[in-house]
Length: 101
Image (cartoon, rainbow, N blue to C red; front, side, top):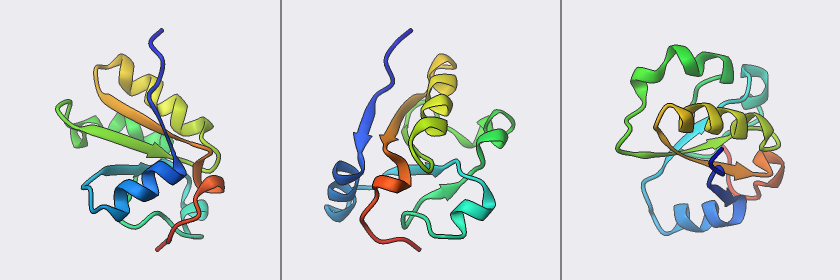
């Protein structure tokens, strides 16, 4: 199985500060995102991903985020097998030290 591409919270923060337009998907549950999400991230719960594939474009890369990086890695593995370009934020929101909204 192909390795899942990873990005650290710090690398992501730097890319966002440079103004890069990134596709961020937060796969946490509603009660988790209530504590804040990375600005610009889209919320799609992990369990909804298979039913919302039409929202993803195989020509673009998506960075997935969860609380600790485990659920988002599982989502990445699933979508990667379907041919999508994905990246997992290691450490999840526990590692995020940037702004939240």
